[in-house]
Image (tube, rainbow, N blue to C red; front, side, top):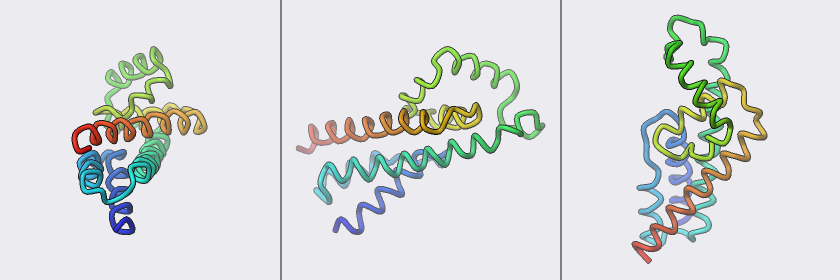
Length: 144
């Protein structure tokens, strides 16, 4: 059964880390509740999918860097200035809360502002893995 459920969880977690409106926690908790796979496997697969989805969002932000002055750019200059001030205040450490609602914007901004990829990967890996570990602990408390 793991051969079917884990790829589905990976896709759900990947999508959840992109601008696509999707919540992977529901899939994660359903698989946890049914015992479809070991907890460690669920955390590992969901984390990997979410990290890779964040890499895609980072790449999109990085690719949009040259378009900041374009008329069609979705973020207005005043909004960009506000976001830049916030990001400068909290810096790359803000990526540790990228799992919160709106975190995909932080990830895209990290790409836009060219946060070094190794730094990005370390912080995103910590944030996304801790996220699913916390969801697993919560789920085990409810279903366990």
